[in-house]
Length: 489
Ligand SMILES: OC[C@@H]1[C@@H](O)[C@H](O)[C@@H](O)c2[nH]c(CCc3ccccc3)c[n+]21
Image 1 (cartoon, rainbow, N blue to C red):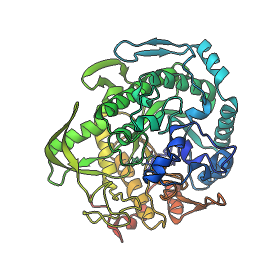
Image 2: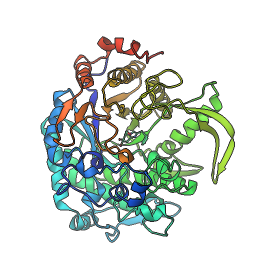
Image 3: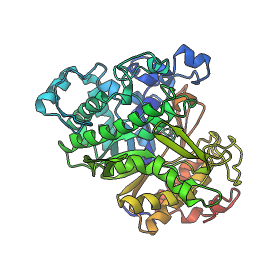
């Protein structure tokens, strides 16, 4: 059984759902907005050619989407405010008190600084976000407010300059100055929205921003510039930015502040524990340890300790790896590689090498991995956990019923095993703009008609509602066995 006060809902991101009518709801001031229409990226096929301004239109149709959530049993939504909407112009000139020897140790934002930020903020954007959040609350939905979800203001990040190796100050998270500006943004958001917020998260998947930006540079993420040094620098500046944002928000409110991490369970086919632990450390614990235990790589950072009230776990599938001769990339020594045919590396719409069904995106259905991951994170950190993303690209809703029951069952078993999971937020409630893949991937429990903006529940959304109503997956366990035999634990 799920606890009575369990949070059932969905996650969304501003850039992926807000725009829809191609005019007064458009925010042109982000790195992603530039990136997805850049001729070089279109010519090389780096991006889909689809544009976010013709998407869901949440900026205008938010009431419809909120009511859909309520109608299908949801009691919580996670969304973010777009930094570039709140501050379309640079905030560098707003004075704050910074302590920065060997890292950004403290950023103090007082009332005077907040009032100076208020002078340059886009007040109509602040007001419109307040309308959206007030509507959400008026329908009984809790709000988890996230701050950064992949996009950065163009005055922080010039993705094409970095992509082409042209010297620029606007290097996004690689530039330590971004840490200070992010803390200002966090303080301002808490100051302006706290009365409407239930829980905060500072950022979504800092590891993906760094990995897809500077290592997996064929994935279509800005700036697609291979650099292990920039990978590490951007990763740890995001860790610092989280810690400084945590402090800035906590200076103004007692509400919980967490972070959302792209989490995968790393497995070998031959039970090579050393390699599995090595990968789990590198890909999960190294970053999280830095903001929970204050251990930033090999230096002690007490100013970054205990900066996580709860951990948002985004889980989609596992990553199967095997040992290789160590490869050295600067400070990074890699002695494992990802195996094709499992996890994220499967044939779209087919089956994995383990005969598990695969999504339209080529991601293997592996619900046991969520249970293993929740166990591993809880054992290491003993922090409240929340599944902040889980879902499947499945335009026909053939796989989603099984995928949904399997993963909700994994959460239910984790809770029965005494793991403190507070909620499950599906990715996502409606189809939306899938970054470099545009509208080609459909993750919605409800289908989005991008012409009419009509939102139509898919069959699996009715299953979601039944499971919430009954407080357990029990009635749907036949979905675990056939026709996809997805659960073998
Ligand atoms: O791909 C589905 C969703 C995105 O739409 C969300 O914005 C993002 O938070 C998110 N993260 C993941 C898992 C990690 C990942 C990110 C990007 C590309 C491939 C895998 C999947 N998703």
